[in-house]
Image 1 (tube, rainbow, N blue to C red):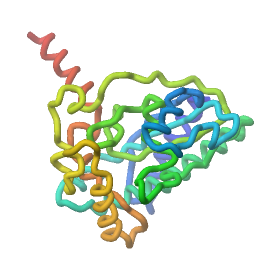
Image 2 (image 1 turned 135 degrees about the vertical axis):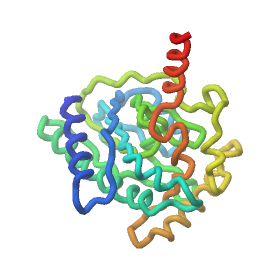
Image 3 (image 1 turned 120 degrees about the vertical axis):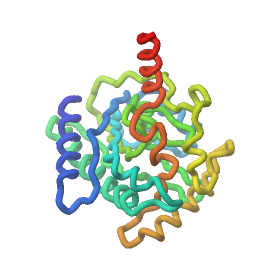
Length: 266
């Protein structure tokens, strides 16, 4: 089942990337699997918000959570590197990726139903609270539990393919083997304090303090939404993720490989 899920997702992403009427394109997706009974899901009621959902609440009889990351083609983050407002390409990619997530979830559900299982059709943003600025189903936290990545200083998930992209998930009653969850840190700042690029790039200085200045960040998202409203809803920014060490890769892993290589060449 796992192989069929990955194959279905990769085909769907490739089709979208090649579609003449879709401006955005994506790299090969990352897929992670979590046991719906993983105790970390319960901890999200503290880590995120008390109303955060549980797999069983979204789908009675849930056994597995499928999470995935859709990495943007590098041209999209590069377009968002300059200026203080989001580029048009970044805004359009957000809108088009949300649509792609809906298509992926529909196809995964068709696959599951064909095998006699059930699944959820969760949107890219589920029950977002515009006052608390939090969701009742955080795809980022779910993807972390599923072994896809770890959180950076910029509050985004850093994966083996970086942080520039979108996340989605499906809850199912199919039993699928879980992905091992690495404890390795992926954020250079959290690893050894050597990077503050995302903090420096934030136009609202929302990342320089603890806790994260969530409302200052959201103000800029709404400004960008107004700027790009002709395309649809694009309450985005992405400046903290565009062309920083974790944009396209896991920078800690890359630095470790470089250090090993230098050590071996001595």
